[in-house]
Length: 304
Ligand code: A2P
Image 1 (cartoon, rainbow, N blue to C red):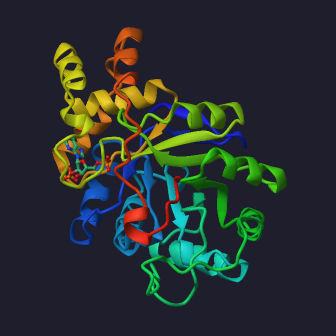
Image 2: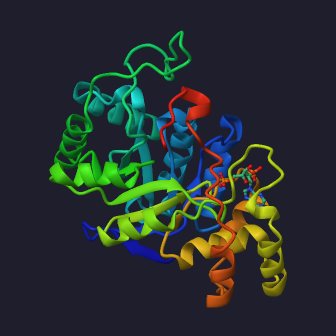
């Protein structure tokens, strides 16, 4: 599979399997098949997804099968918002490593640029409906992330859901540059300016929710007529067009599925390409629409 080079010279496979909302009961079997039968080499995980133990069972089976070595896999996880205090970063990372049954992560991301109070709920909402934040700066958290690299617990570190000003600030003190910013990207939220900025700063960008995520909204990029017409012209599915569009923008893309035929469909995107005109047509359907917006969960207008 095609890889992109990170700013520390390590390689990341451009397509990974997303695991947000992957059912615990299914995810072990799904991950095992995706890696051993369908050729996935990159898994995107997070402690908040609540399924890392089950993914760890699959990873242990995969690695003990002798068919795939640890070095052939790229595994990402993410530090949850309640664990930003420097004292909590390494224990959180070690818990993820234990759950995933791994000795190191290829990539560890700060999941959101916001620290929640530690030790209550994973989403500690106050009486005013707003999440309770903690007085921990990103600088303190990032320095603790950097020490995970020094200790060999993680090969690379990065961020998720960072905006341009947050990256500008991070780069003012980072001794280890973030290798990736993982953000919501699909044709309804194409994120052109943020992607251009990250690429200029030599930060790769990972597209999450590339298919428009999993809620039940009718108006999803998968159902867009421009996308459907292009899919018909290539004899491909709308999902394959969305994934190909992301890859041709030099993005890393992590579609989630627990359905075995869709998992194979989503990785079968290397035998065709979109023309410049097709790329442009899809670029034009942007409407800055997010399917993932923390204001609904935490009462904080994070992206405003
Ligand atoms: P499922 O897991 O049942 O396949 P995203 O990656 O944007 O978060 O989107 C994930 C959602 O898209 C899930 O609801 C997933 O459902 C669905 N999905 C994944 N692959 C495909 C596909 N190839 N065609 C249609 N829907 C898909």
